[in-house]
Image (cartoon, rainbow, N blue to C red; front, side):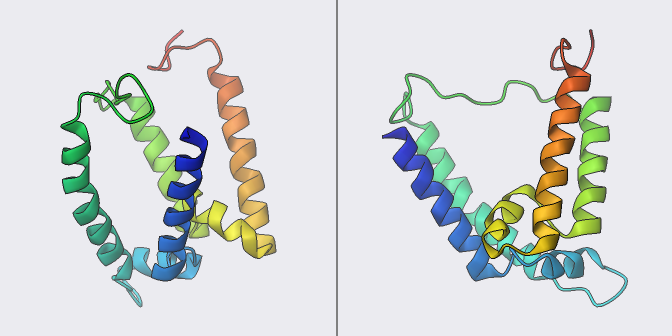
Length: 143
């Protein structure tokens, strides 16, 4: 049942991205262009997502356990450390340069467009290289 639930959630997420226009990297770049032709639509999409997620999250967390797991698997770390700051900065630069975030990039792979194929390949390579570099380190990035 978990794979079916994941597939349905993924399809719903993709549908939302396509309907809202957020799978189009030019919309994201226009949102990030605050000194030029700024497009605030991404802000409204995020506000809408938070507005739906926040009350539903409270309802779900009020349960003793999720539907198909014995316990909730929630993040336990909240420290703002150098690894988080560097990772966020690198993510932001990649997002700003390409207009793609990982979720919308995966949705956009269906178009077969060369830019998204190159982006996704580079993203996968970046993940693999980072994992190799951090192999044997704990979550703090220390040996």
